[in-house]
Each structure stands twice: as structure tokens, then as C-alpha cells.
Image (tube, rainbow, N blue to C red; front, side, top):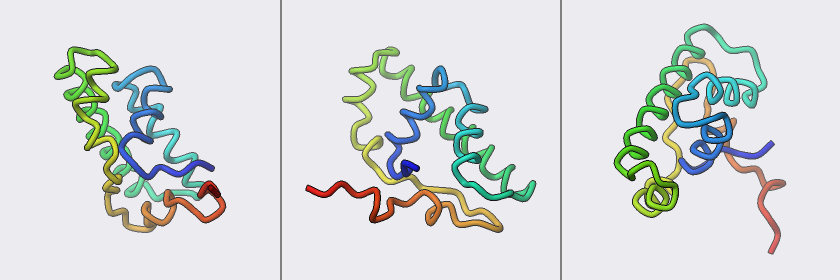
Length: 107
């Protein structure tokens, strides 16, 4: 399982689902990777997070004249930043999506 550590990781997942407005794809991707049954409250928190992230990407995309190169250049600092996961009631998303030792490449 690949980790979601930076905003770039989530951006790539969102884009692979057809674009920055595909909130349902991002939500499904995240909840499938969590791998445990979630409470309705946690599902609502994650869904809201997906909406907010998608909205943020859409605003940044529009401000970049909808050009990939411009978007990546103008938002490089944000994209490289660690994801700030929402606080859920029953799970810790930071622990679920962190990089494990098995996933760290050996150089």
C-alpha cells in the first residue's frame, strides 16, 4: 500500500480519478486504503476533508490558468507539505497513512 504523506500524493490520487472535482473517487480511495469499517461520524469527517481538499485544489488549479506546469510551479511548497489529516473519532489517519519502513526505498 502506498502511503499518502504529502499533498502531492493526494493531488495525484485525485487527478487519477478524473480531476480535481472527483470527490467521490478520492473518498473511495481513502476509505478503501483505511481497511477497517468506519463509523458514520468518521465517514462524514473524511468526506468533508475530501470536499475541502478538492475545493482547495480547484482554486489553485484555476489560479494557475488550468496549466499543469504552472500549477506545479506555483504550488510546489504546498504540494511538498505533509498532509494535515482531520481528527476522526475512532481512527488516527496519521498512523494509517504514514510511510512504513518497508516502503522507504533503500539507497
